[in-house]
Length: 247
Image (cartoon, rainbow, N blue to C red; front, side):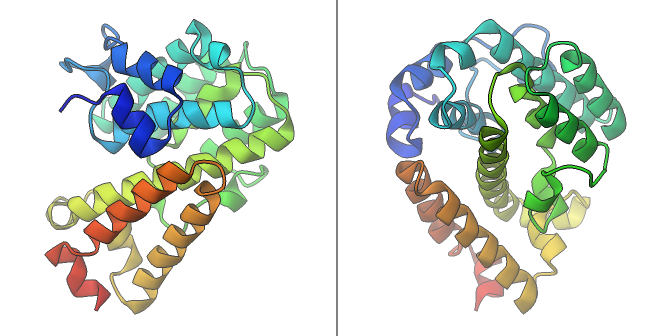
């Protein structure tokens, strides 16, 4: 399915210029994240989050020309390649993190943000990020993309907003993905937030609380995005393999 600029703008609130940039962009060569992909964007969480999060960076005050420039886009795509290598089990998570550090250690703009991301992704707690995480490890399987803003110039207040919005967006997208894949992941043992919840009353309540938190975080800054996520979760709740746990 082709993801158009109009679709991104109407459904996800992405600024027209940002939406058009990604709708027109060609998949980068020799990049495992886009391996054998004919289009840059696909209607899947792992691709939709890209224009959505770039739009979020603009909404926290970073100039569109900078976030659509080569420094940021090329870095984000390079991180995607590393993420795909980890998913394909070609490298470990620790190796993926160290690979990302090599990409930004000499050209990051906000020292405290860079140090926080490094500490967090190395499993430390001496950072502001750990306190903002979700209750489910499965919803943090794309967190190495937190390295991508390192080449941008922003203050510490903006840094906190970037991380808050990242977790709200990506955990919502991945929850929807995990709902679709629940039965498959039961058999394969792949990470899944619903399975990690225990699928009991308390676990389902934690998922509902997370969704409420995410919508409350996103609605003030991007109402179309929050509305789309909310509508998708209403549809998700009617899936037979999900509905049985909600009653």
